[in-house]
Length: 222
Image 1 (cartoon, rainbow, N blue to C red):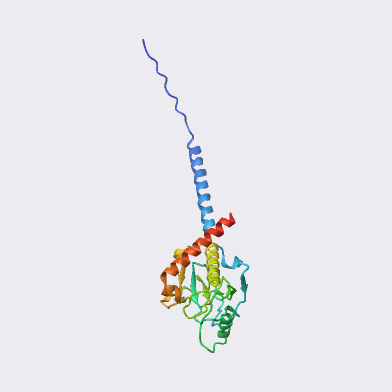
Image 2: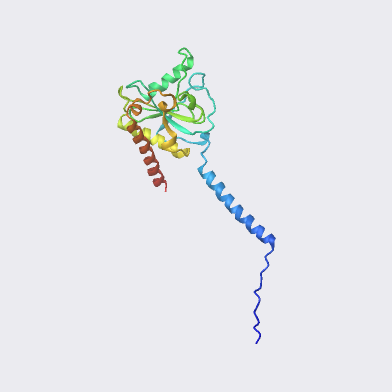
C-alpha cells in the first residue's frame, strides 16, 4: 500500500516585512540607548540652581580672581583648604575680591568657600572658571574650606557641610567620588588640603562619606 506523506507548507514572508520588523527593532534599541545617554548626561552648569544653604556673593569680574571665562563642562571637584587658620568664609571671599585691584599680582579664587560654622559662600558661578586648581581650572569646581588651626583638620560641622556640598555636585554633574573628587595635591603636589595629604586614610574616608551621602540623598528622592 502506498503511503502518502503530506508536504509541509512553507509560509512565505515578504522580505519587506522582515526589513520593516528589523528596522522597528533597531529604532526601539536606538531610542533606549539615547534615553540612557540623556539620563547620564550632565546638565549645563548655567542651568543648575544651588542648594538653599549656599549664599551667592559673586566676585566682580576682573583679571585676577574672576576672569569670566566659560566653564563648559564639569568633570571633577577639587578640595582645598584656605591655609589661614581661624579665618571665616566671608574673610576669604573678601580676600579674593581684593585681588581684583591687581596690586598683589596674584591669581586666586574658588567657586565655593565653606566656613567654620558650615556656612557656604559661592564666589564664582558654576559656568565660569575659578583660579584655584592650575591645569584643572578648565573642567573642575573648586571648594575652599576654612579650618580652626594649623593642622588643617575641619571642624565637624564644616566637614559635614563639605561632604554635603561635594555629594550634591557629584549627583548634579554625574561624577564618581572615587575618581572625580580630588585634592589640590593631586593636581600640583601642593600640600593642600593639609590634613587630607598628611593623613591619606582620612581622605579616603571623606570620599566614602561623599558616596554615602549621595546614596542617602538618592533614597530620599525615591
